[in-house]
Length: 167
Image 1: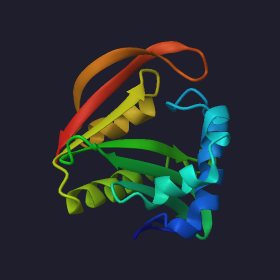
Image 2 (image 1 turned 30 degrees about the vertical axis):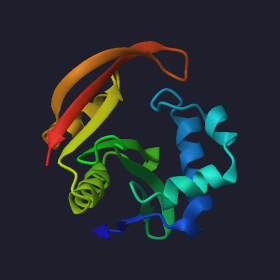
Image 3 (image 1 turned 120 degrees about the vertical axis):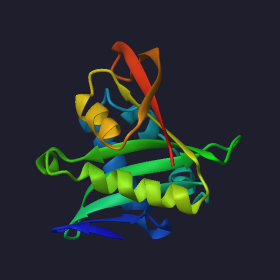
């Protein structure tokens, strides 16, 4: 567990499924164009799918807390076809807590977890207009890999920019 002032981050466990689901659905509702899935799609997911996301040994989902309040989340998923690679995803911090450097906690938690799992290559992507994500990626040394056009869940077609980082 990492700590920054009153903030901490920890990996979700099976007993955290309700909290994870709440913050994930909040993220999708609050920022509908920043994620690959829609709120409607994930809100309709069966309970077991939420549990599986948390307990899957090749996935990790982390909660970001201010004191005991869950204010953000992030995830990392190992590539099933190549376990030396993982995809960093699902980052969200409530607006009231943004601009405090907390994304570093999200990155650090995922990188530490990936190294412990033997991952050698991380991939991350963002919507072209998500400049905060771009800045965080570049701060951590991610290198541009490729761009693809994408229609996001909010209906807007905009580039999805992919980056990689060797760890």
